[in-house]
Length: 540
Image 1: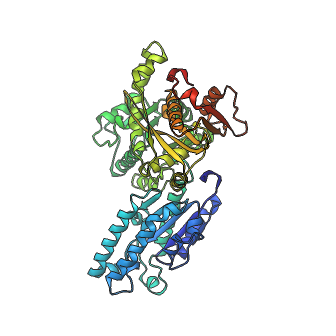
Image 2: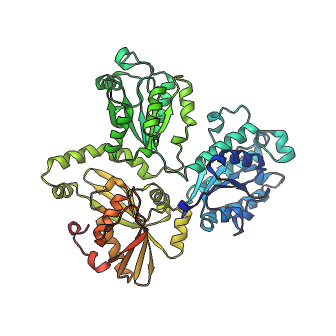
């Protein structure tokens, strides 16, 4: 399980990668991680040798493929086809032989190769085959480099002379940018991603002060529109957009309603705090309202004093001090690591819509006589489905992101999940819907039968559905599955922390014993017969 390690990067490429490896190592130095490289000229061999760096590594494996290198040096395209067939066969099976996360990137072909019509056609076809082979593989991510030169403003990509004499196809600037981008993507597998972006308004979303300039007086030129488009893309990737502005609320609302150059709409904003209190206070209030920890927040503001104040008061918040140069602002955002995200799941895309429906749920809760009536009118549906390859990305994401209702708190990479399932384990994802919408896949259970005991190393649930008795239904369904497997006992291990109080409370109700945040790890045994048929209201 990846949480106990301090993994780095293992690198393999179809070209000389020494300079790239050194550039990546410099970026990793502060984190205490390192980068190891497979021998030059070897790509297939390290993916087959159990003792190779790619298969013994537990962090992130980076594989860089320049398609022309498979074609290079032969006048017979069929020779390149055979090399490509062998590579794709080995690459497709690599995730099952490794516990690492894989990043695969197709690097640009040289101008010389593209000038040859036969070679260019072969490279295009090979690139398409590689994409089609890699894209659906769980735990293997295809990294696009299409906008790398624009993102890093690289004047020259290729070094024809170095390619010819040393098989170093790219300029130092390109290798440096590539190293930065790959390390940033690798780092997203080591840290929990941010979920909330809190935006200032004046001189951030637009130029000017809405309270002084009026809704049509503030300026939203190309640069500020790109800032808003960037934020819309963040919302599409699952982040919640909030506003935090020192203004009168009516003035801000007027800009959204009346300025025709606005890209963002009020429907894109999940929550807001507009007024004259300290912004750190407002961020704390938004954290409470959304039920999300402050370490999942990004705060974007142009004011240096406001940024410094939030940094001092809330060090767990990622603070982005946005330049007031409208043309430079989009480029700055593209380089901010707080926004980096390797994968986007269906549940990420559902997140903003779910939070948008939350006020309706709260209104219903306030309007009914008791909580039982509220739950009944929500009409909550819970389903448990067998964990399949197509759900592994979301399952891995849940193990790394869930902190409040998780018993053991273990994080698993996609390859680690596959290894567990291949080794006789079982897994189920939990999906929840109610009368107001679809929560998506919000829970995960992993289990392994040991005699008449079903060990459950993972039992977790997103904070989105806490206090809905979903965990009770999960327990009942798991007991039913245990009974079908001939097990009479569930063993629920736990690792108490300050953050997982809801999980500890659930276990306390099951065991009848207090479990404190400082207690040693342990386990709670549950008799299947006691809970398989218990009414939901009677269970904890």
